[in-house]
Image 1 (cartoon, rainbow, N blue to C red):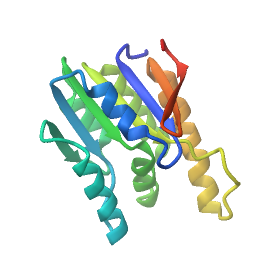
Image 2: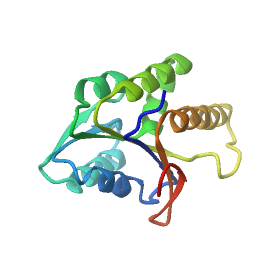
Image 3: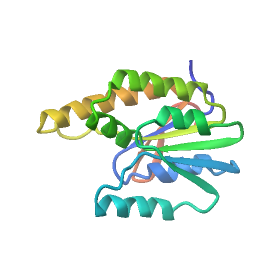
Image 4: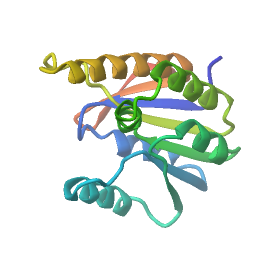
Length: 173
């Protein structure tokens, strides 16, 4: 089952993914930002602060490093946009804790396909570069590719961002 008002925004680091996702949410009065990052060091805390500063007070922000499907279910609603930023950090959080990734992906897809309102998911495309040097790096790259494929199959629209420009991969442009 595919959601008619769901979007996956893919791209590399600093490609414009978050700005594009926020653009897709801009027409709705109620907007929820589900943040999966954990501020474990100064650099990451600065990135989180930068993202918070980019959103005005009309956004409700919820930090959800692990139970993303539960947060989507709890906060999605008719006339509301839910932006998930991002699937890549969510996946790394799960991997770090040894969570079963296939089950987590299935649960996420179920939450997205059942959610009322608009769901916009952000994810990094990590498979375009060099082969990672470590087994963990290769496992992460492979898991991210599988997650991106599963989400792309479940949503109505998929966009790839490069240099701030969107390229529609799936759905109407």
